[in-house]
Amino acid sequence: MDSSWNDDLGIKFTVQDPCQLVRKTFGDDVAEEMRFVVKSVVGEKNFVEMHPNRSNNFCCGGGGGFLQATGFADQRREYGKTKFDQIMATGADYCITPCHNCHSQIHDLSEHFGGNFPVVHIWTLICLSMGVLGENEREYLGEDLAEVNMPDQGEA
Image (cartoon, rainbow, N blue to C red; front, top):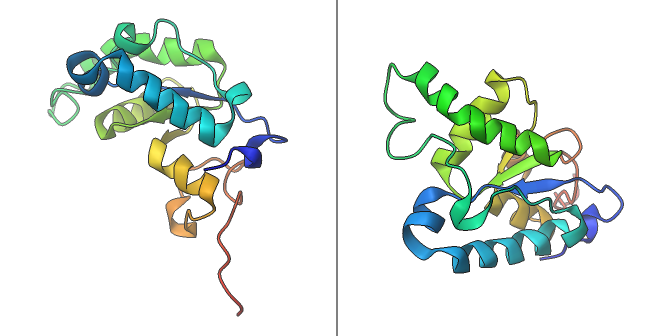
């Protein structure tokens, strides 16, 4: 993994500490390991910490099946507004999520509240940093990342 792709771009990233992975299971140790990976792929100077964070980070409101429950979108978004405000306070261009529920909820919050920040899975940035993220895997990236480290498609 290499973060040099972001040296000149200076795109800022923050990371969501998912409740199930961090607070309920592995604790701050896994949060530290996740930050090591994130900083390795985006550059330490391009990582912006949320506050509070790690085991004390705010829940996004999408876990525990709430996101999949029908008929509770207004309540889910109202609860998630705290997370939305927390992300906006970082000034980051992107929010990284290692959890699918967090990804879906935070993406919805960004659209619903007009945050206009893309939400990316951590694996997407790992692949992007290695130059192996395919064209069809870039559809939800912002224009600033759409062409970064495109894999060689071979000769036409």
